[in-house]
Length: 254
Image (cartoon, one colour):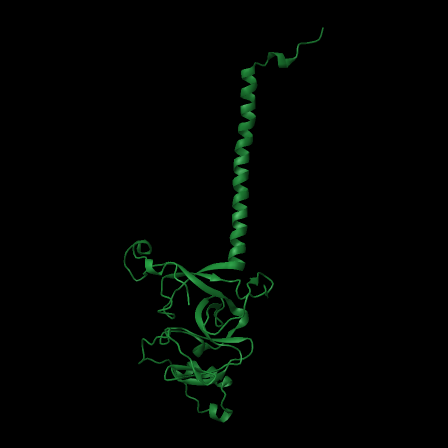
């Protein structure tokens, strides 16, 4: 006579409890697995967006006042000028070329680990000069409603402008008597594959007048909106919360 089946000795309540234990283990593992997948996808999406589409940028100095102020946080469109593909030195196709008067973010030629934001005033082939603080491009005065002069009595050393002599329109003999200043320099010709940039706060800006041109390969993108802003010159412990510039939030960068 055969032995009775073990299943005959398992009660319905025991079966239900056994199923609960199995499902409980699966549920815990499934919960963590789903969250792990979400985390991985989120990290990948963040890296893709930051690398190729949009990157956040903080204004650290007053060189672009009043267009941009210290404490402004910007979103920079990296796709518009063709984002760089990591580790390849190749760029994606551009939506358009940089235009005169664009505000651009770029790697500083003197130290590429630092990001600068300035206004592009000269394209390759442009002839630029400044007379008494007035910018002249290709023999025409450039109307600059954004430019400001806050410290007209101060001027950098003439040594800061020495590099300009190699790009003067004048003859070599005339270059030897060239004595530029912050508000009087040129005319200079912008070489191929480079740009000339200026800060809107002309008396407080470390820009192309002093260190030269910006290579096209160093341009990272164009800021398009201020997503957050606060007054950093406050002594409040939580100034980033209590001194928000609400009127600047969402303002477009022009």
